[in-house]
Image (tube, rainbow, N blue to C red; front, side):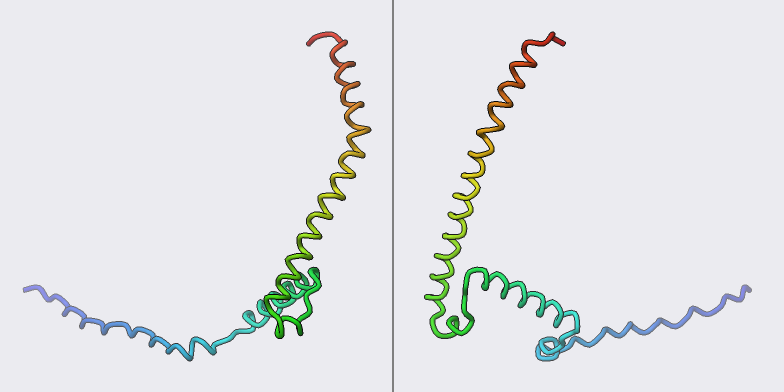
Length: 112
């Protein structure tokens, strides 16, 4: 007769971590969350300041302030296109004739 060791008793089911409630998850704020929130507030403030948005006006006349900010954004974009087009034409006055001259010089040279 062979002596076989007895089978080990079945291990108890591992305990699942208890799920926290909604309120506990809601108020669980880490230091990383606070830093991210501060950085996002700073970025939003810089963008709003670029469009001359006054924070106190936002509380009084939200949609009017957004309309003014939209007008300011359109002014900035159209001004940017006007500025860049002017310098584009200024550069083209010099570059295009030089490019044409370079093409003529290369065309008169020997073929490869």
